[in-house]
Length: 432
Image (cartoon, rainbow, N blue to C red):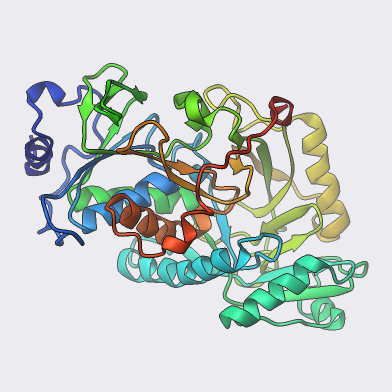
């Protein structure tokens, strides 16, 4: 038993019966460094987080660094193929002119870009390839539209660098993409792409090295007493008691917490393709091509460390049960949609082979904003989710925000209302 595990039991006041019998990812983690003092007085709270994705792991790391003793439980483990944050890559941009809360998201995403780079400075290098790649992001549209106007206003307000190149410049600088039917372009030079699966494994490793514990198992709410969740149960193991609980289960939230999460999320599947680039042709590779967004599709260049291929995301399908949905299968109509798009927009790749396909869940809230709120019935439990396709990008900042909220030190109280569980819910037909 490690020093960290003993410390966990001391803080919970639990006996040996509370030690999990499930597989522990971090049993051999190094001895924890001295914990930072909490932002409030009193003994460090004992936090149990269910879910090792973006919402869960980044919060766990920030809680750990603020002095809390943290236990994470995940069904399959950090960066696994079923997780929303377990894909090969995720783009990071600040162009949120299509959201009512776009300025706040843009501010966080801009700060997140700085932190992604800082994470590389601290944890990449040598035998570890970078996690974040500055690609720039190119948006193309057939005409000026409110989304673009609001995005430029957002960038002006936040002081974020951007360009509005002419279509002649786009055609000259990026001949790989057919743009003769487009009339407007915006370019965000600091945007980039993160190696998602790899970085989640990295965050998990750092969290464990600094004293956190990750256990693999299916968790469910346990006993409730006096309006507080006393513990969670873990399939094949014993119950875990804690002072505070965070539910960060991604597409599983509605299954694990049917009350209050029923009809509060939509979890459609997105389709991703990786196309092989011509031998010897690096024009579709980083840093020779940016990430891009055109009507109906987004994507980015092939990144050199993993060599997965040129990434294209187009279309998707209706929600499926996250326990049984096939992440590697794309139906024939969706498959053909990806091929047709590449032939139209990237003609030199018309005959390029598809190296991999992926299907991943999105978890969209009805407000299209994140959910960070207390459970309506359990005063010591928090619900975090509804990433709405953008949470991963902002993970380093989002996790710190949630950690402060959980510890009763809300640094941005004006955001709480926007992150609250909405009284409005989706109609059941919206899930079909």
